[in-house]
Amino acid sequence: MICTCCSKLLKIELEQAGIQVDKSRAGVVDVQFDPLKISLKKIEAIIESLGMELIKSREHKVIEQIKTAVIEIIHHSNNVDSIVRKSEYLVEKLGLSYQQLSKLFSKHEEITLERYIILNKIERIKELIDSDEYSLSEIAYIMDYSSVQYLSNQFKKETGISVSDYKKSDKSIKRTLDNLY
Image (cartoon, one colour):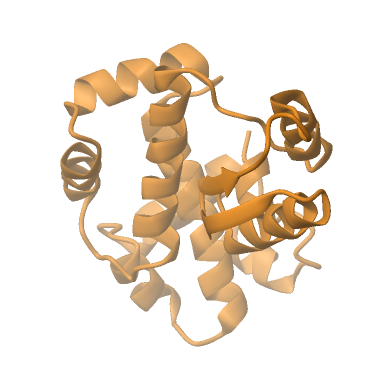
């Protein structure tokens, strides 16, 4: 659950099932329920019916915290810090070394943490292009690319089309953040 919409939808579904939701935010829902009336399996079934999963292990919890932190820094703050600064943000937020976070992420996900960050940056670039508020030079600066050429090359490598072709396209190559890989 990495977006507000998912959080709100889960809250509605849980409340309809008679489960009191105390707090709901991206990645976390605090609930109260009577275990004599509602089983944990029922809660898990509701969560899974929405395409989400109940996080049971500490490692999986950290993975979700990493994803949430990456989304925060790339999609919710016009942060112009470099990948090094992004790694410092993750280290500070999660209390583990970047090496530990990266190793844990790779252990449980199909891609590396660095690639996950790049894929998020590409989706954010698409949003910025679609907004028509910024030039490509400004987008390169906002997303901390050293040049428009570097941004363009990485964009083409990841999407298969150039930035200019993307601008002309129907935008069907956009991905949801929970479906980046």
